[in-house]
Length: 248
Image (cartoon, rainbow, N blue to C red; front, top):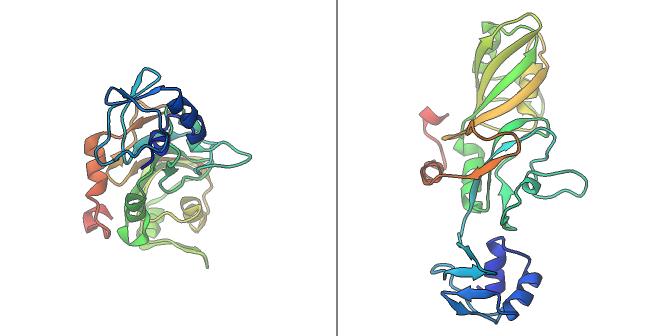
């Protein structure tokens, strides 16, 4: 891999800017000056990098947990609206993307990475990776509603939801709170499932709190993020392409 690309993938700067800085002698590799942007670098055996006096560590793959705020798009880029990648400012590498999506008005756990194979395995329908949401809806939820969730709900010709788990936390005449656990992620799925109940319920607040083995870090405020811990990365990678029954 060319040196300028290698440094760019680390999120240091753009390749065009890095070419200039490399030629100025602003990059040290293993303590030695590197002035050629086309110099070959082996990402499998990365050198120690010093750029403008700062140390940088190369990672083939990066993984972040974000507490997505409402009003931000789960997208890599958008010409008009803010995206989740706009919230990552420190040494943001240019190949990051959100793994899956949350509705614009939905908050909570979002995985961001550049690991394409892992993303594909987590998102493919046959994997049945569970997702847990906290939801606040209009009206009173009942056990009969929970039973309908367990059976699977049909909203229209575009959505027939797989069996899901509805755990009622509070039952009020005007507003109810619950956990919803699903193993798929179709467009506006949870909102449509509540609208498919005999007594339609409007989703007033939605927050994802778990995705597979990942649980939202309570220390993260909306808009904040952190790198995944090694144990969290390992747990994600252990999910098979078709998840076992206990994960469904």
